[in-house]
Amino acid sequence: MKKLMTFFLCAAMTLSFAACSKEDASAQGSSDKIYVGTEAGFAPYEYMSGDQVVGVDMDIAQAIADAVGKELVIKNMDFDGALNAVQQGQVDFVAAAVSVDEERQKVMDFSHNYVDSSDVVVVNANADTVKTNEDIADKVIGVQQGNIADIWVTDNYPDAEVKRYTKFVQAAEDLKNNKIDAIVMDLYPAQELVAANPELKILDEENPLFVDQYAIAVKKGNQELLDKINEVIDGLIADGKIEEFTANHANAK
Image (cartoon, rainbow, N blue to C red; front, side, top):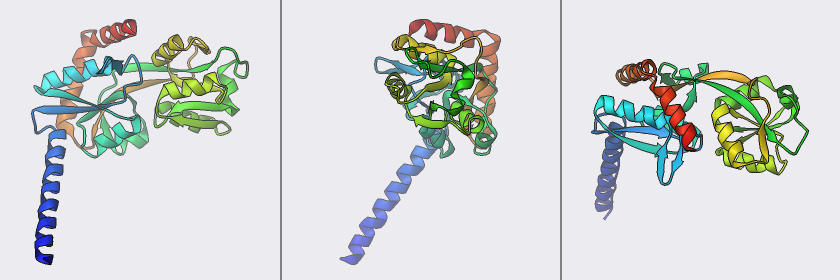
């Protein structure tokens, strides 16, 4: 009986390992599909349109898939989860308005930058606790967990209380209810958030808190895919397609 149980256990483990190996292989580009990780709550870069994930980054992802001759499969997950997934080979690349910093470069490789972004301060239009960007230095600040704003605010405002969210809609509700004093986020998603929540406003669009750049993330050492992605991005930029994608999705929301 023990031998029989051992046999079935070994067989189950073998099948499990085989399934995992197959999944990893497909996520590393050896199948007819290519997998992108994203977080569809950051319009116009990635957002839901009906049951479809769309946005600037998804247009770029589709161009990458077309260039390598594979079917694009979109994996929608939390931002931190997407970054972990590419490191573990569960997706081939991440297109989610990813900022590049030294810590991330230790565990992932990044494409050429394709968008310059401005991060701004969003406040409750009916509150007066924050009147200038500098006023948030000792306030309760909402950020997306793992986002560059999370890192920047934590590094630059040691006296602030940083509250981390997986979705900006959650942060917006807390801001409207005065549970936090401000949200720091990219200008374009901030404009979408304010349009959907008239109780909120962007404090100073003309003077962003800081400026950043976005890139595509791949698993460390995946140079073949990275070279192809850079080729695609360089071509899209040269042809004015990134600006076209941005205009299309900014107008669509």
